[in-house]
Length: 213
Image (cartoon, rainbow, N blue to C red; front, side):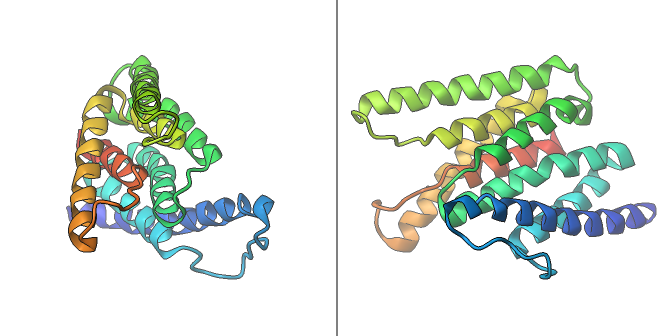
């Protein structure tokens, strides 16, 4: 374990810096909606994103114990963390960020898990189809409203691509975490009439299976 400390330290610095890039790039997506252009002068742009990315790189180093696989897993964790934080803060999912996550999952997910390349493709398609069907079914049941947002479909595809052969476990764990978040919100606010973003639960499910499946 001691020999992994240098790798973990490098991972922490790399994750923090790449988290800054992710937060800075995501801020540019708000410019089209009237927000001020982001500045590069702030060392900490988003503590949750940068801290989460740093932690993800450290965990990847300690769990995977390989420079290449740890780097790949760290890169894949970035859009998962960014989407989770953005959805939690703004209740919005940027398609560009999720698309990058899907591409990274297709490129590296199967390698991190040590399985065939097509499992990442199958995971992405499976997540997209299952949550797409749930979205369509929800619109039929609730007559035009969307209990499941379309952005959650792209999140499911991203989680599935990164999960590869573990895509099923990632999505199921994500749904369980969504349920736990819902119960926590209901208890905290003493009401069932609260908005529940599904993105954080799905992304945490993807992160967990990325390192431990």
